[in-house]
Image 1 (cartoon, one colour):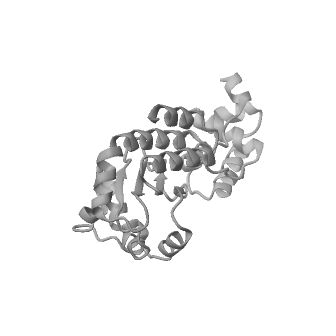
Image 2 (image 1 turned 30 degrees about the vertical axis):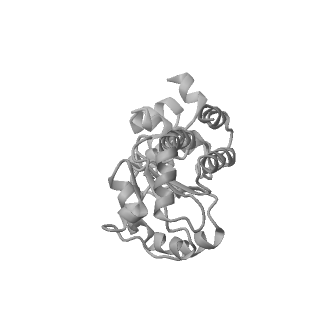
Image 3 (image 1 turned 90 degrees about the vertical axis):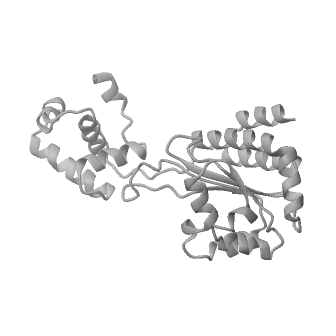
Amino acid sequence: MLAGFIEELLAAGTLSDIRAVFMAAAAQFGFENTFYTARFMLTVPSSLLREPPVILSNAPVAVLEEVRQLRDLEKDGWVRWVMEHDGDISSAELQEQWPSPSLQVAAKHGLGAVHILSLRERVLHSAGAVLLNPHAGADDKVLAQRWRQSGRDIRVLSWIMHMRVATMPRKQFMTTLTPRQREVLGWRSAGKTVDEIAIILGITPATVEKHLRLARESLGVETTPQAVLKAHVTHQLHNPEIALRG
C-alpha cells in the first residue's frame, strides 16, 4: 500500500494531483482530515520576493475560514514549533508550552486531536508541516493509536509529497522586464561591467545604465544586485542568446 502511494506521488503532474494522492493515502492510514502547508525560498529576502504559502487540505471549509480570520498566524504555537523543531508532536503536548489559537478553533469543531509533523529543511531553504486528525470527535487516545499504527508510513509519504511540491510550478510571475532589460540584467548577472555590456550589445554605457535603472524600477528594487536576484527567482533572465554567446 505504501509503495503504491509513493509511485502515485512521484507520477503526479500537478499540485491538485499531489493533493488528491496524499489525502487519499492519509485517509487510508486512518486520518480523515489533513492539512499541509509549506513555504519555500526562505533565504530570499521578503522585501524582494515572498511566495504565499502552499496549502493543500481537505479540512472542513468552516474551520479553514475561521482560522484565516485570526491575526498573527505566523506566531501561532504550531507554526512557531515547526519552524524551530524537527520530528512530530501531538496538539495536546504542544499546547502545554505553545498556545495555538488555530488549534483551539479546530477543537471547537470537534477536530482538537491533531498530530503535527514538522518538515523543516526536508527541502533546502523551506519549512512545512502536516497536521492530521483521525476524524471529527476523535480524542487524544484515538489519535495516539492511529499514529502508532501509521505514523512511520505517513512520515515517509509526507517527506516525498513535500519534495514533490517543491518541484512543481506554484505561481506564475508576471513578466515585467522588456527584452533589452532582461538582456542587460543577464549580462550583469554574468559579471560583466557596464562598459563591457555596452561593447557586447553595441550601445553606449549611458544606455546600459538607463536599462538597468528602468529594470530596477520595474522590479521595485533599489539596487542592481537586488534586480538581478529578483529577476532570477521570478524566471525572467532565461535568455538563449546569452547562453550561446557566453
